[in-house]
Length: 255
Image (cartoon, rainbow, N blue to C red; front, side):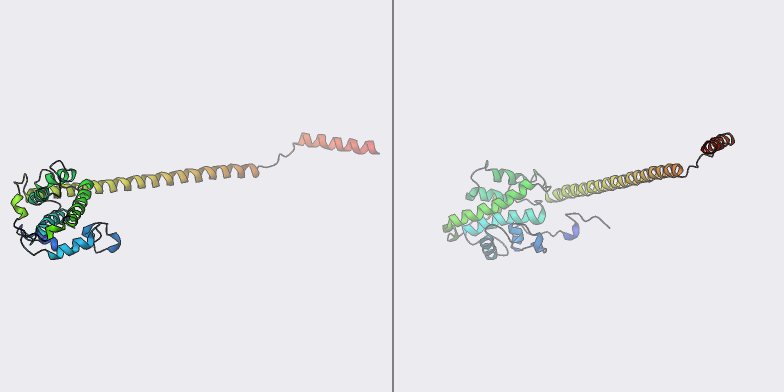
């Protein structure tokens, strides 16, 4: 069976950056395996998230200041979960900084996310980034709820205007992630083979030990049988004669 890479040509589609693909929901179909995240419909502000996501247009900017801020945050979030951060989403993270969701460039969440948006870092399943992305969306929605006037202000900006040049293009990022995925599969296969070898060796050793134990018991049993089956000593003719003489003496003395 051919290796299925995270970024294979058959499952990659080129879309305009202005397309709001984040409106799609791709929750884990196995409900019992879903996590407490927005992607699996179980985020902290899930109802607010769903309502604002439904209100976004299919293409282009949000109608209000609040919707454009939300659009930027959800574009980041979608690229993380669906694409593994292979696209240039620097405009989104920079716009959140401009809008005030992030307090400064030294903001811990901004500092974690930003390098991945321009390809300075490649996402290879780091838990830190996953937690930061969830917190980023929590912060964005909390920010909008605390500044409800933004929902009434018409929007005249596009977060894409805040994009900066990428340090690594998306195709190269895909290649890097595919290479990492392949190495992980090879390491997992090697580890499984090692475990199987150790298990087999242990089984062989256990079987050998059991055979030694049975062999030892068999030898012990044979020795015991030999002792039990030992013949009684037969008196010699001389000893028999002496015994008979003794008996005769006893008989005569009694008379």
